[in-house]
Image (cartoon, rainbow, N blue to C red):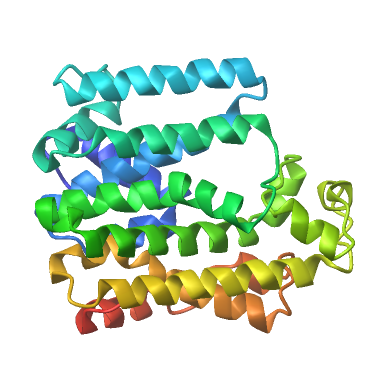
Length: 286
């Protein structure tokens, strides 16, 4: 992870501490592209933490507008002085990355500030596309250029992003509840007789596992669709899709725990994940 640009080393270290899953998957990228993935994922980490760092929505929007302006500056070769933005500018330039996907990422984090739970599964999937698929699309572009923009690559990224986001949101139910934030569809809560306040007050209502199960089934369906769409994609794109391997592991652990998001096995990193990623990478699969 050494680099002539110390900012790139900063991004890798930040991910290793705060987003170890994406850090591990980025390690399988060619060394020439790895630092670009570190910069992309570190940018995502920074904007994703806006709501927990700033409780006042207006201040959060000001912070996210700063990031919009900063990314625009990075795209024009005039990055602000920042440990993430300087390497991000390099990643944008080298990969000719699409600014639209950065906008989608920031839009999703603005949605976080509203604090409203999604109305239904389609609304949750739209959020997942903005908060996760857009990042996968950027990673695909960074790794493959035009081959990362083909319809098959875009579809694989869309489905993989949805699967990863849904899996992460289920595992984060306890944490989000502690922050009085809820990402479970309102119609599922109603169907299973669960009040949002029950979850936000950490009461662990009886109907919660049934809700989690329905979202987990959708996540598994999205993951399989991603694998189907990715058949025949160039192998250099694989590191952008490797989070799917971890999503599969987490979903299996969630099922074994009876779809209880509070179960310790759901919160802990699965043993052997590095070995599993290595094997999948060798096989050209995720």
